[in-house]
Length: 440
Picture (cartoon, rainbow, N blue to C red):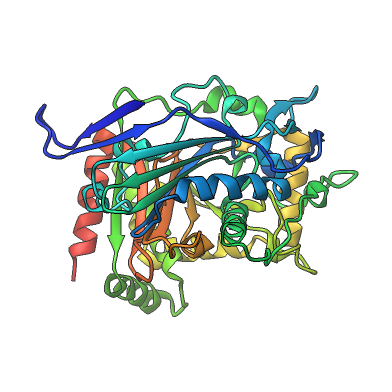
């Protein structure tokens, strides 16, 4: 077995040791023969090539949970067979899945700690929580990242954590949630409530391609040399911040008093984060800063796409402003341009974004830009394998430029904002956010 240990503190002394013993991984293959060959990925699948890691914490498990979940995983992979393959590239550099049926890596693990020792997993802490995930330490490209891995960790209190690592090239959060809930249904021996729709050609580029909307969310390949990802000489620090309902009501009231426009909690949190991040980075007033928001394109189509579309359905809205205007103008200014950018995502916008990538092979903008995604409406908290719904669901790690929002725990109205920033920038950001959260 492999032992992983974590010491929480600023000195060499461990204030509380958290340890997980992992068995060697095994491959879980589909229970029946599945399609063997190349599986098309749409342009929306190509634009966010990152691994995502999520932990699901259950207070009460059962003794043979790992065995039951492993057996049901083999069954559900028959329906969601692309997970059992691997990524490859075509002659024109597009990513594609080789459906080989080789299977999904599965790990059993135990901990002599309790879930109470694990703590609040909504407060992102990768060195600690990644012990609950089966992941690659190093990989040369996104092609090396498994499409799915699963780890089941049993705690001495009887609690269980299901750790999921996915390759975002294959699925977005909505598709992952559909898969997990379908897997849970198979585990409980009930019929699937949704049949996965695996045909991604519905998101194919038009012929000829037609770009009829601006796409400032992307940077064209010929501009990448002067727009390389920012390289920092200091470590990235991950932090989480809790927005309670009372604070959100006050922020909404502030924005609405200024503009007389109703705003959502997500729009309020996104705008505040964007302002504080711009301040913390000390972006020059004349420079443009952008906030890209992941928007589900599925419901934008008329008629709407199949409910269980398996793949990436998100596109990125782009709110942009000079740093000076963003910081100096009333709070409602930032909230309104975030809201307006999200509203611009229509069926035509989605099709235009697909065609734009077809012509440019563009990548998401990074300079003076961050990306934000809302997990709070995804059905992660419905994933019940037979021992109840998870008490908490949270990212086990963070993509450097990505900001996430998610409910703090099951049935909680608190919203957690998680992000990573260079150490010196995070110190300023933390002071700004805490001052805002404490302001009456």
